Image 1 (spheres, helix red, strand yellow):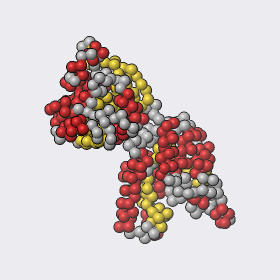
Image 2 (tube, one colour):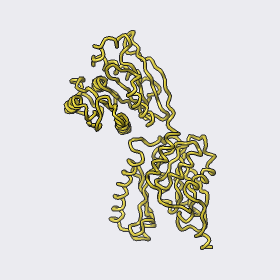
Image 3 (cartoon, helix red, strand yellow):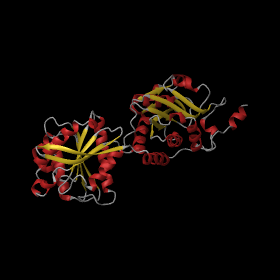
Image 4 (cartoon, helix red, strand yellow):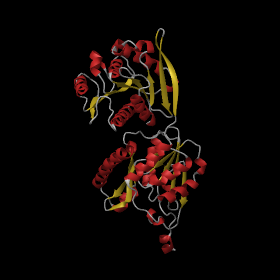
Length: 437
């Protein structure tokens, strides 16, 4: 019987395991499910499940704490958000000392942070608040990693947690202590030595495959974005046209202040806005001037006027139901950056973060010292004059700030990949600082 158990193979590989597992989870389709795979091996399994359920896919970062002399034997696990699970029974049986456990934890904390950057980059995690979260791995042995994953997900605000694996030992659900609301396993064999014994191909999943799985799913299951054409009253008999785009589950809204001679249809700002939308950040692109006003070039460089328009627009946006409870930010380009920083420097400004693209922050004058919102200045390395102006302006800022040069870019960031880098920098900046609100 034991020899037969050793030879049993239920799955050809993780893709096959994912398809078999998905067949057991059809009852979850249409229930606002988020699928989380445990890197690395759990992600290709989870990708098949996510495809079958037509659900978004993300990762649940958890690191096993392996016994120093037996790395495959888990004595606990670490998860995002400071979650820590320790198996006291394994510690007693193996005799691991506290200093050895601490050394393993330090090493795995570093790996946890590195993997978050490697797999997600600047993109935020999929929101879990109030949703059904399906945690998937390629199998379950001790249960320590799955237990930590469930606690990470619970801390993220999940309304319901389903833990699903292709194979697990009999009695496996007892190891979870009720952390999951539902558990699913395709097979629960009597003879269980290791997860790999049930796979024909159980080779290590490379990082590139994890990223590819996530990218494919994001392309197919990006957030639904609601675009609304709006009219913004900013003064007596002055109404500005704009487009408000709010993704499902938005974590903040960024107001764009365009540069001279541009408007809400600026292709560069629209490209950046699209990247922000994909990261579940709302955007408002609007005309700072009416068509009649834009004819007079003096208005284009009237920073006090443009800042006033931006302030009034921000007040209008704050009263919209789409913005309720969400942090707000400014993205300013060229002379629009001066307006953004001037408005952010007004007493009581609600703005949580500012990004300037090829901006003229020097035109904000004394308002620079009043800005409290964390500010990112992005300038092309070949835009010498503007780069110098930004360096001087940054020395006047009293808030958290950073000046980042995009290598090889000129003022309009027309070089291949330059504007994409701006979008990534802006996404990371807003996501990080909106999270602090």
